[in-house]
Amino acid sequence: MAQTLALVTLLVHDYDEALDWFVGRLGFVPVEDRPVPEQGKRWVVIAPPGGRPGCRLLLARASTPDQQALVGRQLGGRVGFFLETDDLARDHARWQAAGVRFLEAPRREPYGEVVVFADCYGNRWDLLQPAPGHARATPPSLDGVRSGYDRWAAVYDHDANPLLALEESTLRAALGAVAGLDLLDLGTGTGRHALWAAGAGARVTALDFSEGMLAQARAKPGADRVRFLAHDLRQPLPFADACFDRVVSGLVLEHLEALDGFFAEARRVLRPGGRAVVSAMHPAMCLRGSQARFTDPDSGLVVQPGSVAHSVGAFAMAALRAGFAVRGIGEHAADEALAARVPRAARYVGWPMLVLLDLARPAGFEPATPTFGG
Image 1: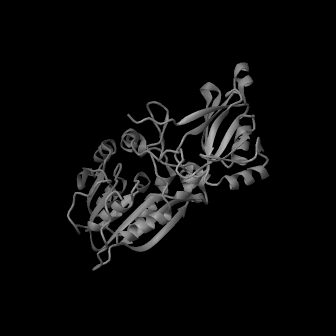
Image 2: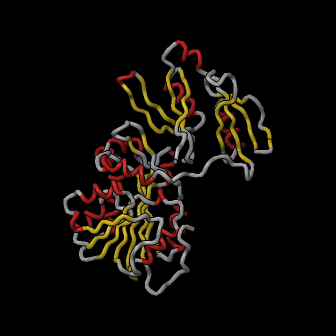
Image 3: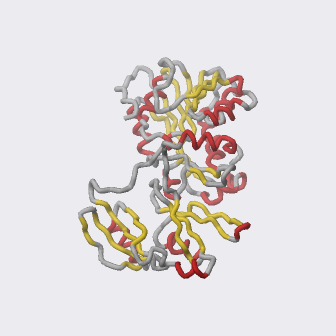
């Protein structure tokens, strides 16, 4: 059984008042803010900056006298929220300057440095920098990726996702002409790139571990020209060495904890002189609280399949360790033209959304083979 505590409710007097304080003073990032007109409320979710997985805060406007009386007192005066940081001195100084009310001076305990502060309603929080060996934050869980994408499959192509719109044109331009080439699509999803490449004249093999996504791909026009296979990219690829001219992978890397095995296998199956074009959500999106997520059409709940916040440097170094030559690394932001086509992109105009790696397998160079999953 895999379970995650996803949200904790904080009673507030007013949504915008709370957002001004948590976002404006603490630097929290808005994750979701949508109206729920049938209930006369908003669904407002915020998260600490930095993109680390963990519990998020649901801001709930008090709507009855009993609820209003509990704003700022829902924990009975106890410390009710525990916020971990990698630099307590930095955050303490910054928040003091922003007018945050601290209830004591920072102190050192066996488990780390800690200081108590009050939010705009008087709720007490611990700001904690754990001592080495005492970090309480749990590592990101990827257990739900496969099942999450199975659920996402039905609406994936109709989700008006601005990242997909930006990624498709950018990746395909970098890939160039593919007619007559053997092409492997790693993490094909609903077959976006595989079907395009087959239509452009490539001989395409496409892998994904979500049967739900593969079912959508196989139902599309032109799917008979693609060999779709179920495969978990955390395992070695089921192909001989040097059997593809191109490898493409779209928005998969955030779902892999270990990058070395992925890049080593991508290089292994490429012919000398072959190229790999790999896209990923830009790590800067994590600073905005963004990761792969969707609204389940059956339950109406927001589902996050599971992500790891890698850096651009981690992508590049894993590719280099695998023996790739880096032809280019592109960082791409939303612009006004994208926002006009996909309105959800408007909030990201000027913000890096996408990383694109253009890689080549040089002839005659054999690197040490990274351990898969290391």
